[in-house]
Structure formats: structure tokens, C-alpha cells
Length: 175
Image 1 (cartoon, helix red, strand yellow):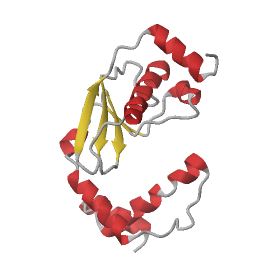
Image 2 (tube, helix red, strand yellow; image 1 turned 90 degrees about the horizontal axis):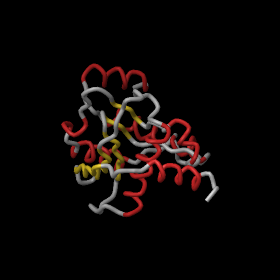
Image 3 (tube, helix red, strand yellow; image 1 turned 135 degrees about the vertical axis):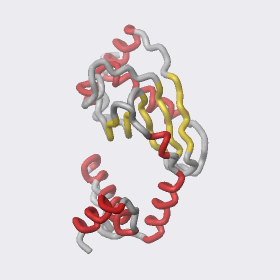
């Protein structure tokens, strides 16, 4: 079946067939090309175990955790602030929440993951979030632990104007 037909069938019946999951995996293999210029030699190969793994991950999702009331942005960037750090995009913004997805077998908040989320929040304060209204006020930064089906929400800390100024200098190599 052609990719277009697989997609049209999914839109009609909403069933996550192995074919639609295979297409999602193939699409994901394009990301390293865009981000790092790396082309996987097996770019057109999909292991059936990966299809089952993706199905297992999807089955863990509590859909109520990802319902948007006003806005949902996939892979949003942070205006000019993204350039400060060599390019940055979050996984998803839903309403006033930035969510980062971690597909790890360990259910633990690592320092680097926390710093990454704080970094996204700081970048949003400096450059806004592309595609969002200027009035957007991020209240929560969260990690979704995909292999556990758990969202860990964290309230954003207060960030002073002085800290934001220091961050810009630091990111620009002026400190």
C-alpha cells in the first residue's frame, strides 16, 4: 500500500496500523539529517521490534495529559533566543506548559534534563515561543517519561531580569 493510501486510511479510521507506525519511524529517521547532517545507512529499514516498541509507548499515553484548551505547538523554537544557544526547540508546548519527552527506562529526574527544561523556559522569556501569542505565560515545565506514561510537572522558578541579561552575555561568550 502506498504511503498516501496508508495515511488516508489512518485519517478515515484512526487505527494505528503497523504501516502507519512504520511511516512514523521512517519520518523520525529524517531528524538527524536536519539536525546533524547524519544519514543513517539503514534509513529505509524498520525493525518490527521498533514498531512494537512504538505501539507500547503509545498505549501508555494518558490522552488527558495532552489535551490543549487553546494552543498546541510541536517542536516550537524560541525566536532569536534559539540562535543564542546554536538552535533550540522544545518537544511540545500545550497552553502554558513546555513538555519535554524522555524515552528512558529510568524514572528519574536527571540534572541535565532539569537544566534543559529551565533553558527552554529562559529562552521563552528572552525570545518568546514561535507560533504563540506574545501574551503566553509559561507556568509549568514538564517531563513526560514515555516508558512509564508519567508526566512530571514542575512550576517555573522566578527568573530576574538581571539573570536573563547575564544569560544572554554568557550565551554570547561575553562572560
